[in-house]
Image 1: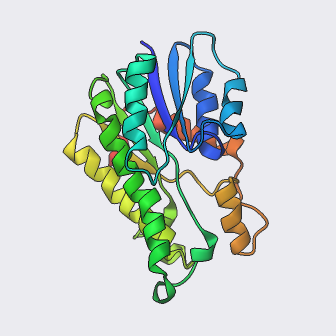
Image 2: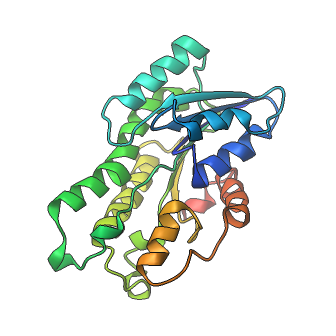
Length: 236
């Protein structure tokens, strides 16, 4: 049976790495959701190596949009005949190093911007893709979160990530809530590691480090392995 994937934030970083892995698998459908399908980084996805029997579809989903995900699903159904999604990875995220301030100095506009993209965006995405996930025999909805969103781990991450960390904590709650409300869907958040993406390296620089410690080549295959895990014990 072919597996249909949808990955947001697919034109760079972790999202692009996952798309590359999924394109290498036979008989698949890989939906790469990007902010701007016409951007060179989005168009370059067409040049990635892929199995001959695997299809790449590029759609527009901006995490701050209330309608993009709905329109993308309509496009998948009407223009591409995609009526089922097996795996959705809500990877698109946002982190502004200018917002790395303590709680007492947090700006409402920064909080709203981070929550809109990191927490509300995945909720809107889930609502749009739910009908397609419900047609899958083993549906998954995975959100790329961060250790910065761990309440238990706050003492281990003493950085002033008020907007980013709290938005990821909200994402963690929302993702687990999805699984409880839809127990037939395996839904879980995961920390991908401190990876050398644009966001990761910007964060490292803000803390006085040259770059994040882990490469995409090192961590993305492990992310794909966890996403592909068949069981629900990951939720425990």
